[in-house]
Image (cartoon, rainbow, N blue to C red; front, top):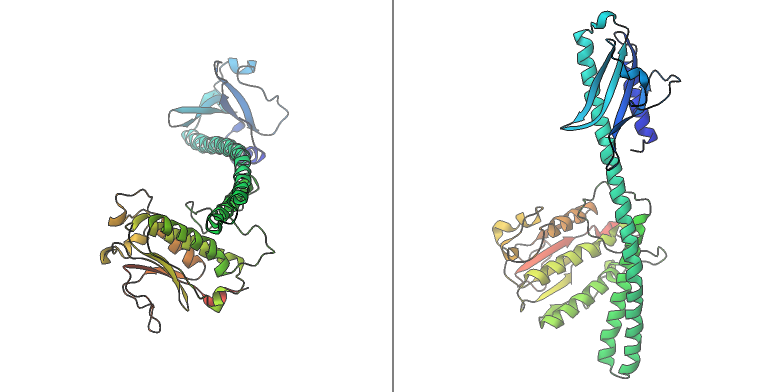
Length: 378
């Protein structure tokens, strides 16, 4: 075990807090260690007082081979695992240790055992993280080449297609998706940089590529365009009706503050759910209102009893029972909406509020993403 400076300081503080108490003259903490196939040993990792004694193992200290009434050993134990021992030296006469002293030392040994256990767990987690980061690096490196090859083959295919504009458009869409995957790769690469973990977003947060170029303005329209193009392609593949905006209000065209880029994540999540759970012949689409976005499908109607339950973490509605999923998509979508000052709800009818109704009201399931329009723009 490689002792960290902070852990060493913690152990020293623990021992010093007990020092000079009830005749105690020396406290030493040993940590159990053993290489595979070798005999276990106990290495000293801290002592009180901080004197110029040699820091040697129990096996190499001849003075410990002779018993003494002024010395006792207390195990540092976590469940059935012996993590180390605490050696206590006193100046009490005749080995008559007060019961109160013995009780306090047992409490100290329990505290030290917990400290050692936490430090071992921390070190194991750090090793796991280091291993995973290395694996991410390898995967990123291996994916770069085939992604570059796909782009090359797509460009060659465009040359061969000549004047077949419809086919060329499909290939160009493939190139756009290839660029999107490259952005995912860049996002993964950033995992090896020091992370500033957000305190208000759960561990299930979806990973969408960030706005890597801070000099490029983002708008609601620019965020939604690639998502809608992907939705249109999915609808064409399924031979289902698809609806998307033809007119974009001013609030969708003005530059956004960076934190509102999560709008894309919310919409992508809702459309993914619609394609996954709505019947193959059900229409899917997105419309824009004066205060937000409506993502709808004309599949099986979500029951009134499930209107709120579907936003609970882990809950899966009746339409999703036989489909793959984790039940966190809508939970996350609403959580993100609220974090940016908006809201997400399933409309019971076409009425959004007292001032606005949907233009296409006859849809079975309509999710309304309400946005803080006045605060959106930089």
